Image (spheres, rainbow, N blue to C red):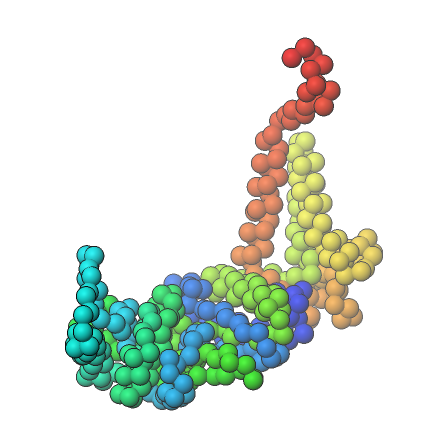
Length: 379
């Protein structure tokens, strides 16, 4: 993960970010199947603060706050009701018109609406829920009733976030109030509302979940561009760790693997007596493009750097010798602890080979000259 983050904008804090990525993947990894579902890792960010304040939350972070400002900001060991039904009176499925001709009619209508709200709140309270997370919104009257009944609530939570909350808390998504029961409630260690500086931005942290197979990497940064770069860099690191779980084999970086492979391919070409040896040797020479470009990007002399690495591999019999991009004073990538996953390296070489084969299958290219398009041949 550190090697992946070395070339990114966030490399100043690569050690801590690499540890966060490894911990996140190991939290959701299925070691029996040797696979990782990255959908269980939510990467979220908020403008403000420093990159060093990026944290791994053992649970879910949602960009919402409690619906009423006087609701408690921290709830420990809550019983969470996850609802996809709105706190509002039922609506007829056909067109309807309500005529209000007197104050009494308005009062009856209001009392009927109040009865619906009281019934919904009572169903939730009777189930033992102490926190409501609703996919839909509710008006101020329902919000006030929830507050008076000491039932904190969160509204307008997205469907994807509801699924992650259900996975993390062990709860069930409830589509109707009549189906609420204690068995369908989720739980966690603590739900807290966090404010950021002097702004009104607040977010909810759902932490210490019993099923920690859903985690969140919460990124802080000075601008939205910085957070976007950090998200892309962290995604690359997460994919690298996932590949390492799928196939734990590694190869050392810095171009050492390509140089060693190039030498092996060229040695094999010397034993081929047909014209195929030229194609094999060309493939081996092409592998050296990776260390050459590494040296160029690092500001080194590409010919000298490649010669020194190849010399170290041949004379010292050290297959880990590569390009010293970080100017550490040693060519040994094993000492520098620079390595890549075997799965990723083989995928790169396989893809590059397939692209070349596809280009070679194009046996002719027709180019139309401008003078021919202007009717020079009588068309």
